[in-house]
Image: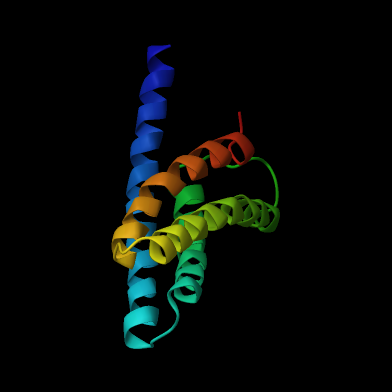
Length: 131
């Protein structure tokens, strides 16, 4: 039992590091699109989220999760499908935060970046990792 807990804690730590890298990509692309290119915040967020999902997939499957025996294309498609729920949750939080409060969009984004990873870890562990 102790070995399983240690393995899970190490996996959560790796997931966290990968998540921080993906979050930095997400915020970097968001700020670039919103502030430098003048794009609308929800469109900028959707694009930045998609870029970060790709980075997250590559790093997650290389360092965090041991994938099931399936093609990499099938694995990536499943990863993207699972991430759509995260994108919807992210967009909902941003929409509510920006539309109904006077909170600065980056503060709302940081809040979303705390909530969405919980969903991501659980769904990826359940559907992508081999037993």
